Image 1 (cartoon, rainbow, N blue to C red):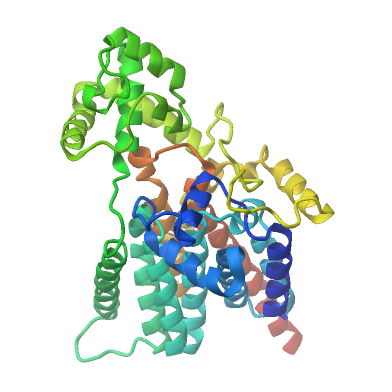
Image 2 (image 1 turned 180 degrees about the vertical axis):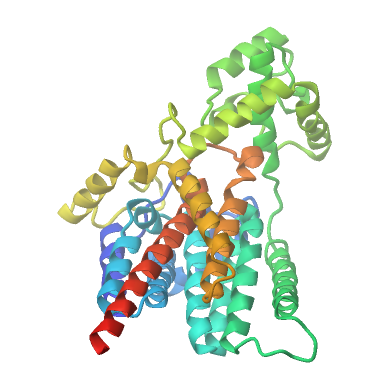
Length: 448
């Protein structure tokens, strides 16, 4: 029943949004899929390779189908893993799977969605692995973990706790029987670190061999330098990366003011070159790294404002809450059911949630910390594995979002997506554990 409901919801979602909601980044990667552009590492190439595979079998919506399979399989496994009652399991699948921020993004062709779907599948596989000890479940979990950490440059910190979660579940399924004098935590760590080292190497090779090299950090560096330049009223961007040569500092600052956005770095492309040469990159890197030392107030104020916008902290509104279309393109990509009542209802339903706490990332971050405190207090109780699952999820969600204070290239809601998913799953597990305790107590009384 659980998998039937999850499959039904996945089919309906695929039908409504086929071939997937797409922004400029999505179209840029699709051009690599169909061969209009060489495969590049500006975005992780594994997404292009997986999309190529899906495209060969199912057409342009192939990646949407793959993401939907991962997403709803993960939701079903989590539903099965958190409670014994099938009605409650169905309720979990319905509520967690259709949580507006997670659901609408599951239909969007972004690497953030690949990370979320793959990492959710790792969590679902860990819960099933704990109960079955199946090697096939372990393999599926490792494949999903590899895809998740390879699908986004900043996914590695969030993947580290999930390696320990999967390893912990593997040994938990075997009762953690002592092997000579080796403590269980050491065996878990050895397996986790070994798997992680192997996958990092494999991910590096996949992202490096046969792809066109480019660097992404200059976009962040130029955004930070522009923000500090405007705050200090002095040009701090090297002339070698400016599009307009020979202008005075005041003239360039005027151009920066006209193109600078506090939410996203894209408009700066009118003034600066986001893909400078090697010599210009060296000068740019030196100037960027000197900002916290030379202009700490302006730099950290800018970064704090970006992080606040990212989390939706008042008074900042949610920026790019979700993509609702396929942008205009010359590749023939369009939403097949855009004019249907199902599509319009879905977009209106999600839009109504944007101005609610469901779309405030700071709410999920606060929930993450509360759940972490609860799980730490539960570590030494009878069911310690459940508490450790919560700890792993909390650490993964925090490791995903905290580095964004420094490296976020925009304040888009999607950059917090995995943290949002972690918080939602943690809350779901805790609620179901209390629910399960009451369910078991009721059964015990009925038998007596």
